[in-house]
View (cartoon, helix red, strand yellow):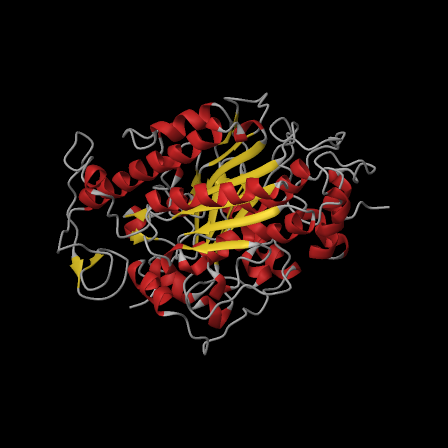
Length: 502
């Protein structure tokens, strides 16, 4: 008999082991694809070779730290030249680092929904935010599974598109919406509230899941004074002036009318330096939280995960100070670090591409090893993941509010080195100068500067076919919209500050 969630309340469940990962993966694959057509898309989330499942949890608790708008290549442990992340670099050195982690949509609500459900955005219907989009009630999310297994579940949230009005925090017993509280949503306040929620979790005496979401790297790139201009004018500041547009758009220049510009400044390097200052400030505040975990020896009992909901385009592909419209590396490549109480893989780096949607499956495998895992994806902590030589395909999707009308998204797909960007509608193609496919060799061209599509038609056909199979075998789900839904004035102010509404 499958172990029920209720039976897993004990830190050391005593029920029989769950089914091997390969069998669980095949069952959801069949539901996703139907019949023999699964042959190609077994690559979409290839399972590692079967191995003996653990008989005990790898940790008692789960602490998930997510940082809004944090691109991987602006961190020291991913090779960045500025000292933006000295504390996170030390954390990464003591954990397991995934060098090529992709989000499944470079916008907060779709990305986090995919991360917590194990599903692709087009399949769950959450493809945009702040436009009446709500997370469906019937979509199973990680906090619900952990809550039902006896965990105390708490969320410290600093971005209103993840608040209760979006229906995202399903399964959390405590939700702190900082934009509605005195003190605001800055990283310093996030850490202070995380301390409060940590104390409450410990008082319950139960296993707990604490999710802490920092928003500061998000626009408007305005860290406190001691960090705001730390990198402005330094030896890495490259002055590059671009047009200031009068129109409200993100491409081929900086909009001078909306929230993307500051006091008419047209130097891209200035904005990049301010973005890096935000990372440095957030890095220090996360360290305060990590210090608390160490002081109380909580890190000796908890699985601590660090990642981001998406990156940020800083003029990459002429897309300025925004995210969500494109599936280029600047937007979809994020940090991912796991640190376990007994980390026998400290300092190890996984170079194989992975999808953040596998987070839910990985966590359940680690914390509830004797429960049948309800989430699709891979177990990212499997020791065979990096050693496997099986072909790999990972996907990301992107698009703006227009995707709600035509269910036609830009899709990126990559194997171990080759990446295809496929613009599936006219609007997305216009943004790319009419191109509908682009092909990049990420091993030689990580910044995606040289489009190889004209010279490698076989790779284009192979990867376009994979994209078509993904959508044909799992058609898009109609988004859950409620345009009439009113939001609180506090939420409206937060959405305006972050640039989601005018």
